[in-house]
Image (cartoon, rainbow, N blue to C red; front, top):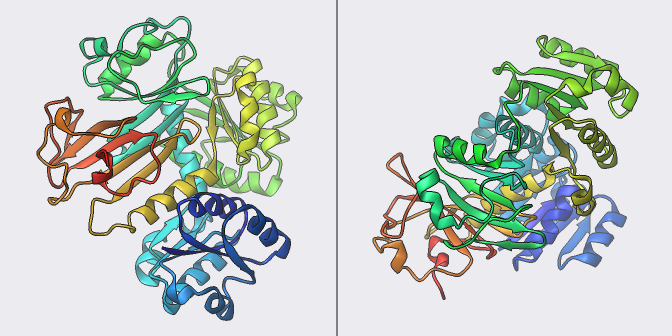
Length: 451
């Protein structure tokens, strides 16, 4: 598959790293020759210097023969124009990153009328994930499938939890539908077995019906109740989308933003929200604005180091839920020492969306990837597949299928019914299946079988 990426910024570099490793023929278009040279030195790709919205550059890059054209430059308009041009030149599929809130209500028109197959908005995706974590205050992260019907929620096992040492096969009597899908223990990540037991400090991903998830959360004994107030530092695009998502709740929200004009804008857009003009990275300002009185703290400035420092300060001040936006993942390796657990990485959200889109087109005749998340420091993939009638897995009880090791079938959607399967259940045509695995690059439901 030939893929052309336009823009070698944070997202472009991550795509070069991930897609080049999946044996794709990848070409990068980048205006800055130094950036291009750096990426060519580090990844197995080809590239050229130029403006991706220029016809001659696209022709030279071979867009005519491209399977997928991905526009990820810093400018929405250039991304839209270059994606439209690429489609006209001959690219089979086009993807564009669009972040401006003014375009958010026009996604359907742009996609349907202008021929762009996928529009991605990392800021909205990040805000959606933050809102989900606020909804589940004990959680470290929340991934949603099937329009929110299924949630894969990450928790940490504390030394006060009554779950420590209990084998997972006892969970059915305690929690019904609940499934422990992933155990992250130190540097080790495992897909658990029935006799696996949780230990203090484990980070686990679980799913199940809401009532069963609530029972499980109560056994964590972490003391986190419902979040009723949130302080946000940074009033950019992510904050804008987050305020929209929180507007229907009764959560008391305060935003601290350094730019006076941005404060005026947010005050007009969200009059029910307290907007403060000030430096949210200054501890004095945080104290004056009552940091310790808030249930949650969200750091959304444009500088990773500022987000880290203010989050550590909020955590040490006693705020029970701290959520931090960071893009440079190398910094995350030190976070275990400072106890910051809920991390939002917008560029990784984009990469997940694009990887899902590409995989779903590598095997159009088979069962395609409909959703993709990377979990546990990117060591585990959670995937949603669609089952077709010719799939090899149909009508065979799960306990009789020769599944790959380190793979777990989480749930099945069948005719709008949600099923958390047992060994005697089987997959059927038209099912939507969610699974987790440590194996990379599964593109078809048949890939769950041993080779």
